[in-house]
Length: 275
Ligand code: ZN
Image (tube, rainbow, N blue to C red; front, side, top):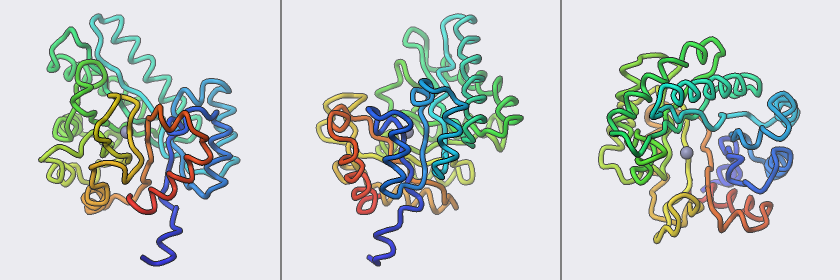
């Protein structure tokens, strides 16, 4: 591998949730210090200082704001709950526009007491309801299919095929998909569905799948620590023409308990070697 490639961090983006113990300010300082190019901001990181001050901090940093995480959670048992979800998504669109994020990642939601088909219908209806506001704000929406272990309460959209179906049915250039290797690596239709998604792939998330996975939510591995062939999936995504950021999104109680600056060095090394 060429020396140039070893140092190429031009597409490396990190999610603020990956370094959860850090404030937005600490994350910005840490990422810029080691040469990270982009940042995906979770709304929890915006909350303490608000979107306007966050926007200023991000602009001053020179980091590219790749996306805002997250919108979605559209399904609800009652019309009141579903309306509240739409309002929250409208706030997310305003926040994204304020901080200059071109994309909101949607974790679509699910309600365990209702059929998945009903949740999927509410998801499609919810997206269609807020999409005009996203379009007028210049903010895209990316449906992120989640691993089926989360189908009860986090997302009724669990495969690329389901996400592609919704994107095709709605048919807006502002609606696309987010490919996250953690959620999708197991799917035998993945390559075909990535090809089908084509230009509607808006973003790409990486981490790894540990064996055993000790916690369903907070035991994601660093790239190279698990069984996901990240380079292969990245290759399929790039065959569609995708040339956007490679976003490191790791939820890990183990890594969050460690020194975050040292963790960042591990992320950088793992990104260069395995992503
Ligand atoms: Zn993700």
